[in-house]
Structure formats: structure tokens, C-alpha cells
Length: 72
Image (cartoon, rainbow, N blue to C red; front, side):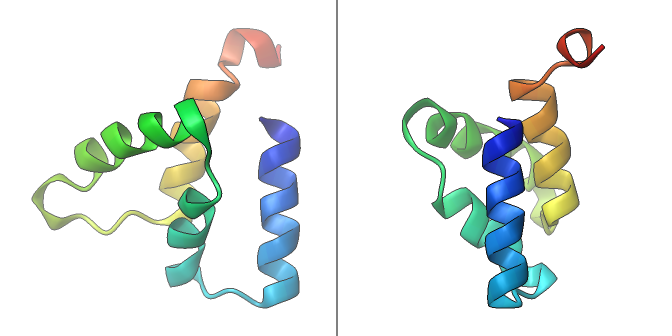
């Protein structure tokens, strides 16, 4: 999970992605179970028309794929 996130952010930097594009492009790169997870998380986070930022995406991603007890 950490490696994937690092690689995605390297791509964003190389492509000079705007903040607005990062969530769309990052979620596009998800596969299989992670894609299913994101569909559910996106519905929850975006309820009421909330714009989901890359920072929000990363926070949810960390909670799901790299929980605090594993980080310590």
C-alpha cells in the first residue's frame, strides 16, 4: 500500500497533476478489491456533494490498507 501510494504520487509530480485531478487519476489506478473499496468509500465521503480531495482519499486509503497498529 505504501509503495503504491508513493508511486502514484511520483506519477502525479511527473505529470504535473492539479489537485483536482489527483483523486480521479489515483482512483482510476485502483484494481480489484481496492476498486470495490473505493466505490463504497466515495459514496460515503461524497455524500451531500462534498468534493473529495486527494488528502481525503489518502487518509481513507491509509486507514484501510495501512492501519495504525501496523504502522507502529
